[in-house]
Amino acid sequence: MVAMLAFVLAACGGHPKGVLTPVADTTPDSSRVNMLITTTRSRSANPGEMYSGERALAPTFADMTVSIPPATVRKVGEVAWPKRLPPNPATDFATLKAEELDMAGAKSWLSASVRKTPDKSVLVFIHGFNNRFEDSVYRFAQIVHDSGVHSAPILVTWPSRGSLLAYGYDRESANYTRNALENLFQYLYRDPEVKEVSILAHSMGNWLALEALRQMAIRNGELPAKFKNVMLAAPDVDVDVFRQQIEDMGEKHPNFTLFVSRDDRALAVSRRVWGDVSRLGAIDPEQEPYKKELEDNKIAVIDLTKIKAGDRLHHGKFAESPEIVRLIGSRISDGQTLTDSRVGLGDQILVATTGTAAAVGNAAGLVLAAPVAVVDQNTRDNYADHLGGSAARNSGRAATTGGCDRTRPTAPGCVR
Image 1 (tube, rainbow, N blue to C red):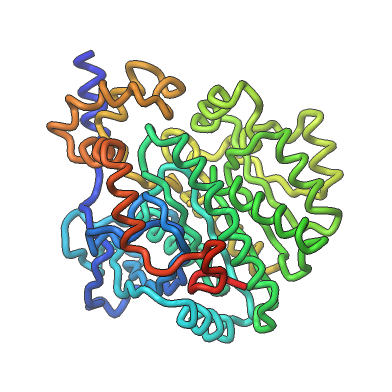
Image 2: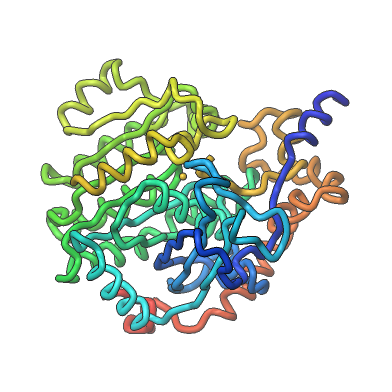
């Protein structure tokens, strides 16, 4: 047990909270990534976090710019988290702008940004399970920069609590965001300035992306031709459900690219949680029935099993491998570990002592994690999220202005 604790303590890192407080860019050699944020998260009481893991009543928008340090101090595929605040743009990722937008402001951002692209295109990114807001912002900035993509970047971030114990909550939050994501897709479809839409999703974010596309196809009769590329990275999606989703989209579905890895430990856990049914991101694409089904649906597959880049769960290889992240940029032009959340010491001990499958979504794990929260800040943050979930949710909703419900169908945040 002592040896195990020593290993966990050695592996337990992290970064300061509140990294989204804007700073001045004092480094002429840094690069900038400007993105549009659309989120169903509630606002955070901490300005440096901006949004929490709780659910808002209506989508909100933000205009964010992230500074990325020169290539001489950072590897392709790496997020250079600041070790202290304020961050140093010469060595760290740093936030230069973080401004909330209303609906009119979001439309104006999109129009201006699309006009600057060579092909009038947008890239929509949907993150996965166990992501705090800042994790998704910095990881997407890294992907946009390292891939060399020139599309207007849009980050869709949904209410993930950023904890291993919140798998069930995160899954329902993904479901909660389906309509908001479909509304975004419908707006991009109707916007005559947008000529091409690419979608990149990771892990549980694939479920959200596929469900929103399925809803859109059923509502519209088909998916629009401008939705060219959909890239599914390590999708945490039941293979049987995926068959139905693809069928519901019809024959004119986008070009799908599937990133799989048979050594993905996170998806192995998910498989056990969901009744031992294979997850799409962990299949062997050369085995039947998958090989024929992929060929019949013209789904391209990139097998990352032998790629060594990525986290110890082997769940975020595509974002951290220089070759693969550049391939993503090339595929978009021609045509995220992605989870950087702070896993607390309590979470890691829980996994080591009970097994990951038992830990994920298990409320009883709070009892084991509680003593560790006294000495570990990351565990304390995650533990507080679970204890204070209802209170935070209520306060977040009270702070949300506007609403997109049956009593206010034309309120700000309702994309029509």
